[in-house]
Length: 128
Image (cartoon, rainbow, N blue to C red; front, side):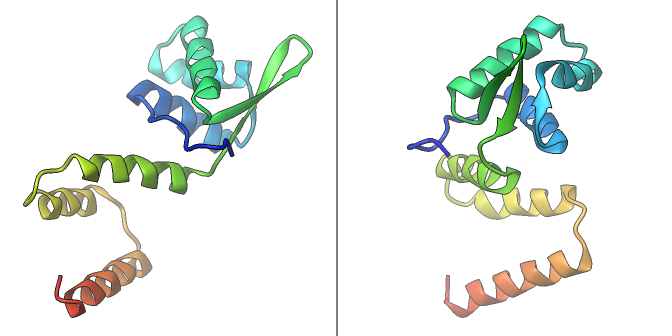
């Protein structure tokens, strides 16, 4: 990982990161094919890949006349950092509705729900 934390992701950059995370490591052409679902031109995908390298989210290695892209970190730490940034900007009193929305929109297993309940109960026990 880079010395400092990677810069925040735009919506389009996050879509590309999800593709690369899913592929594990990918040549530009693999990402271009996968990004066809978004209707993007190959030049758009290449620009996004270049930005992701510049921001520190991807490492690129030249292989012949192409590049192989590898995520610098796994999805969970990257998404946690994005959520931390979001929560820094949330006004008082809006955290609970935001968390409720995330729970409603998510497909959570019984084990995940149990873990959430444990975290809530522990938070209540601290009087916060």
